Image 1 (cartoon, rainbow, N blue to C red):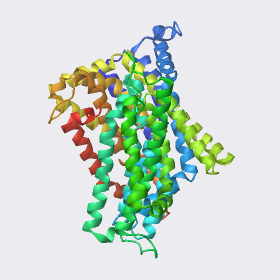
Image 2 (cartoon, rainbow, N blue to C red):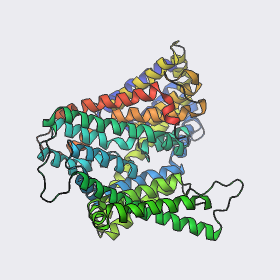
Image 3 (cartoon, rainbow, N blue to C red):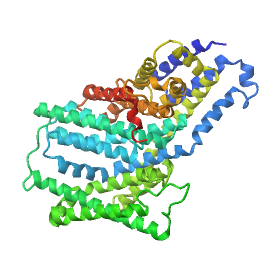
Length: 531
């Protein structure tokens, strides 16, 4: 039998060797799972009582992962993203955003980042966002003379925001593997995700202000509204939209009041914005928005603003359906994903864009993406179970804790491992292989020593570590040599843009991602502000 230290080194080197020769991660992990047990247990124990020995642990681990109900949300979110990519919803959203930002320095790059945030909040899928932004935004930025590196970096960095912004599939998998509340993970990642998006937008604004040649302004369009007039039209658009929203909320609250469903009962949570006490506030908001539309902005100006911004309505509705149903306590993660698919499909039918070809192509792409994820899940779950069975997590924990490093030193070593592994491995494999080893160690560390400014409550440590892990995976999507975002963009970029050009455009945005990661490490309480 091989000792656990030597076995750990064999597994690590073999994994890199198998990935280097092109073996898929799922098959490499499954193969190493069997090798691990074969090197640790004698053949008669391993194979003599087939179905009841150590090999049965692998089957149980895989079965436990694949029968988790929340896993169903993954193909549903992928299907929703595929429908969004093929329909005209995303293109109309980009056009509407571009109308408002067209006369702003670096406006198209800013619009691209905002569009990426909205798409991330709709589906949580990374690859589809990068491809779609590459098809819509890249040609326009290059045509207007934007700096190539700025355009490439903006698209890929913003397109990978689905890692951090709920409903992130990375967070869903982390919650599944670590048995952490996915709703709490979504809530905790809101602020870090939007903080990172803000870093991107501020970088674009500052760089383009310092060097105007990076983002030339387009020629003005005759008759286009500018300055105060455009601001009033945008105010009219927002007020009209929220007038409709508050009107619907008022009808909803009145319905609950008439049926008695919003009566205060012990042991039941109040209905969000549906209680009797909420009605005066909703009426007040409705009156304010109505006054803005009819008395301040004016009906004609509001109508023009609505026509310019109506492409934003469908995405906002989808976000409201998905996230609203989760945080409103109406459904769980899986049901919310299904409702999101129905919302996108219904909007596409109303717009007469949901053809049989689009649905079929989206189903095929969902099947391919889900198949890849499932095979990686099977292999990685088997390897994680085998390594746990032979005592690997205990060995690694003793190795790290026994190194007599300070708490933050241990955390920084883990961050380095995540960043290095992210250069070569898919995030699914990292979640399933590394997290069962690292999270128990982090939970055992003194909570008051985590962070440099403030500390995190011990009960929130798994949530904080999940958000930090996702920020690491955000970096991995841009990290050479195998940064997935580069290959997604290359598939739709003009031939003259090489992979070297794409990776060169990543560098400032990788630095921004590392800055965001540093904020989470220095000030951990940022993840608890909304919890």
